[in-house]
Image (cartoon, rainbow, N blue to C red):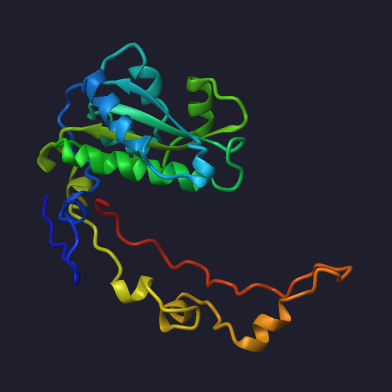
Length: 234
């Protein structure tokens, strides 16, 4: 897979090397490998240390593989069924209301970097049936299926269908200046549709605790997101 990523600051090479391919070698992972991946993921930080995540998995060809294979959508099944394992990441909104998805996402990041360190590739999929995941895993209402993760040894892109082979390149990232700002009124925020926060506007949002009304001035609005970028390997 071609990788032209670069950075303007000295960061660990794993952040540039890790990507989300679609080509996998069709061989099963081991239970020990899954345990190692999730052992790393469980050390992710979480709000109040609630750790609102759970990882359910099926190894390629095991008793649960067919059921797990029905969870990704049709487009993702074109490639992800060659992976060595499928993992469904579930968050617990009862354990951590408002933060469960954020924290589970952090745990996924830890798992992805651990996989890279082990010489494995991962690809998290948002394209899946939540209803199918709930049925297969028999999830109660407070557990939320977040993503399905394909894990395995990276395969050769030549095995992919033509349209997917063209996308088997490392995806770029926005420039640092576009995602980093010193304060809310910097150009980085304005480009994303945030209105600068002036002192008078901020004071207008404040209400004393003795006020009978706790109404607030409208919060700054973000501009609607633009069109998605061409599909590459994250």
